[in-house]
Length: 214
Image 1 (cartoon, rainbow, N blue to C red):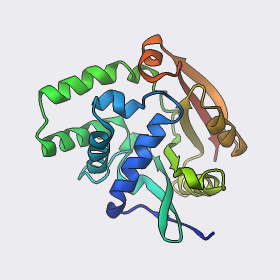
Image 2 (cartoon, helix red, strand yellow):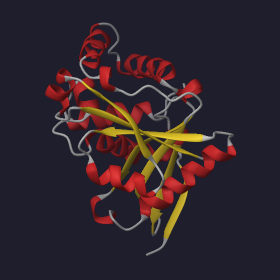
Image 3 (tube, rainbow, N blue to C red):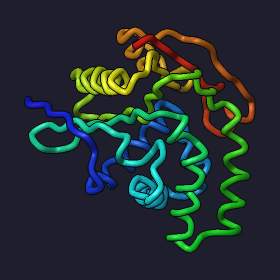
């Protein structure tokens, strides 16, 4: 099996939408994007596909992602970004761009903000100066083959080249397989956030913040 890694391109938008939605689901009953958007899976994928190619760059923009291919077919992806430049402030602008494109500004944006407020309380804060790794997902038939391990090492090397000295990754409490995988790459739990409302919406008590030096 030949595995190649590369930077993501605009043509990867559909695959990246699956990566982002799947990573947001992990092992929980309903992913964070499904809660925030309040839409069906096809509608969520359409929104995320548009989000990856907005004019405004942000943490879910295709330029932040690496993709692993097997025989020329994308099978896994993950993102890495500088939160000072591409964090949630940039994301909010990109979301507004997508809503305008879809003609859903106004009431739809207000409804999204209300739904988001129920779950964003558990999003971990960014460690100062950290390179953030996000949205890690692999197609089911290609899991447990070391593909994500290669992507993780490559995205951490990208952070090193950009001058970052530590990396951070966030995950749901209870996502034990992912936690063990990240621990093998030197990540350790820093702390966690819990909230009953988050658990009611998502199905996990909260989120863990993991860090490692680069």
